[in-house]
Length: 331
Image (cartoon, rainbow, N blue to C red):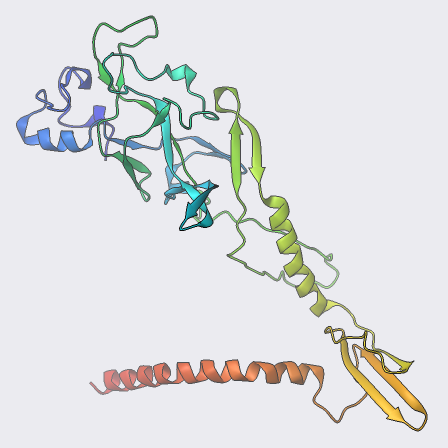
């Protein structure tokens, strides 16, 4: 892929002289190729300002891009209301193909915050080459370079349209190509000299939706960061419990108490009925009656069915692999 002015079959007088859709100014052997791509394929231009991250200088940091937006829309489907991501949209300044010769709008009149359902929105069908960041239109999309905004143009001069793509993307590091991840960190100092523990949760995704100001400056960002922080804190709180110093405590109450429940910290409740009356003994981080399996043992027993099932599923595969290895060594 090359910019159209770098193509070997570019007309000597430039692309402004071509007659769409025939391309008679192009050599017959290259005419079919020109019809398929020129004024129909547009690639993302760098640098790009990514909300929540900053400026990206290389397209390799964004690809593969997605085919939908971060924003969502509610859709009624078979009397069920679904929340779906909006499909990618293209907007900008281009020739609308009406009876006049004017573009749909001037390039400096494009409004990135209010293009939807206006003449600025490009409604021609398109597909996205996600790995190359190229938008491929089903029809020719171009601008009239003779339209200077001073009235009705006197002629048609085809040129590249001024287009913008609104789509979701993720950023990778320029040097390592590793995805740039959101992290929520909880530190307890360096006194124990222990390595960092990582808790990856791919299902948690931070999103940023920009609101644009003049000259495509980012005036504001709608983000779910607060919700994501709450989710991360829940996981951190749970992981933190493993490292907390626990102090055993046992309390005996008069009567049978029904308002005390096992919650992980309270690991054992004992009810006793005897000549002296009824008592309830609750043990926190401790167990007083040891004739039953401990709390940790009971949790391990709960996992045994799952462990057995996984082992049963993996055994045939391991057997097949070992037989194949024997056959290879024999052969």
